[in-house]
Image (tube, rainbow, N blue to C red; front, side, top):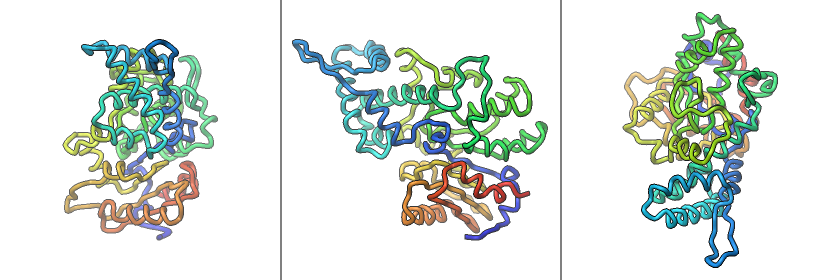
Length: 362
C-alpha cells in the first residue's frame, strides 16, 4: 500500500466521497450488530403453546400479534391466516440463528409472504427498541442532544471533517457526499440533523433542508421517515408504536429481491455513486456477497475514475479473509489506479483516527 496518493492530497469532501454503512457502524451508538439483531428477532418471534383443547399456539409478543391480527383482517379466513403467521414466526425464531443475517434469511424464503411479513414486523419492532436504548435517543423535545455521549464514536469524528468550514460553504461539502446505509435505523440522519443545527446554531427547518440535500440511500429500507423529513409515514426516533402502526411501517422494509431491482432509480444511483466516487469509506460493513452484488456497478463508462481510494473496517475478519476482501475491492470498480486501506483491528472510529491526516489533507 502507498503511504500517500494524489487523491489523498485533496480534502475528503472536496471530491466525490461515498460512505457505506453496515450494522457495525451503528454499534458505536449502542445499536445491535447483524448477529445481535438476529438474536433479538429470534426472541421476539417466539411462540407459546396453550393448554387448551385445540393445543393452540400464539406469538408471545403482543405488539407483533396485534399487527398480524390487523393484517389478517383482509383475509377471507383470518383464523387460518393467523395460524400461518404463527407457523412462520416460529420458523424464523427457531431457524434464524443459522443464517448470516436477517436479510439473507428472508431472501432464502422469498416465496413465503407470511415469513416476509413476520420478519419485517420483527425488524421494525427491534430497531425502534434499539433506537430507544441507543446513545442518540432523546426522551422528549425539550432534551438537547448530548454529543459528549458520542465522543468515542465515528459520528463526532466525521462531523469534525465536515464542519471545518463556514455555514456558507457547508452545502458544497454535503453535495460531494453520498451515503449508502444497509441498516434499518436512522442514526446517521438523526445525528446529522442535530449536529448541524447545534454546531451552526441554525433552526431545525434550516438543518433539515441541509440534511435532506445529502444523497442518502437505504437499499433495504428503513423503519420510517423522521418527523422533520416531511415524509409519510413518519416515526420519531425510538418511538413506541402500536401493532397497527407497526404494520404500516413494515411496508418500508425491503427484502434483498425488492431492494436490488437493477432498473430501479435508487439502484442505478447507488451503483453510479460507487463508480464515480474518488474516496469510498466502508464502516462496519460485512462484505457479504448479497450486499457486494447490490453495490457492484454493472457497466462502466469509458471515462472511469483516474484514482479511487478505499478505507474499510474489517473487525473480526481473519488476516486471510481481510486479504481476500482487499483483493475484491481492488477489482470491485475499475479505475486507473486503486488503493485499499483496510484493517481488521480498527473499529469505525479508528478509521478517522488512523487515517485522520489522509482524510483531512488539503
